[in-house]
Image (cartoon, rainbow, N blue to C red):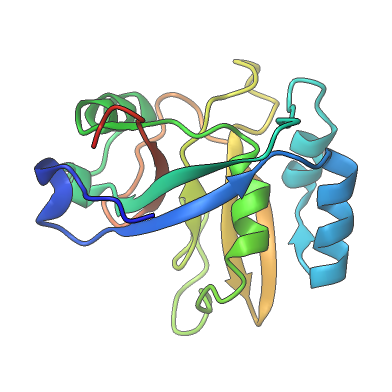
Length: 183
């Protein structure tokens, strides 16, 4: 289905994807990852193992928007709270955590992220795509969400940790769900 973007972010680059979620359990998702050669980091395994990470029984399709922090209006970067507030005003909302694994399985042609880019710490790596999702807990030791990355030809679904004071870079790419009443 074709979706039109609200004029508030239609003048800047963004990517729209329809993502199927639900209908299969966590064990089946992990089996599909193995079949597709998709890797998980330790934080990704922690998220999958957490009892608050649940999946929808009924399949559905969510319209998503990939947009940079800068294109949300934060040229100097911003915290996830400020980013989320702006996204809501633009007709977007946070994703269910389950969207990350499903998007990873459906986005198999992600460009390479490492080539020509330096290694990063405490920020999203170049070429990565972070799912702006609801946190399953406020516990600082539990990963906050997923990001997608291709490293040396290998597709990854990686968990990440970022506190509420973490400032996301203007170049970071985030994925949000289009709110049903935004069109």
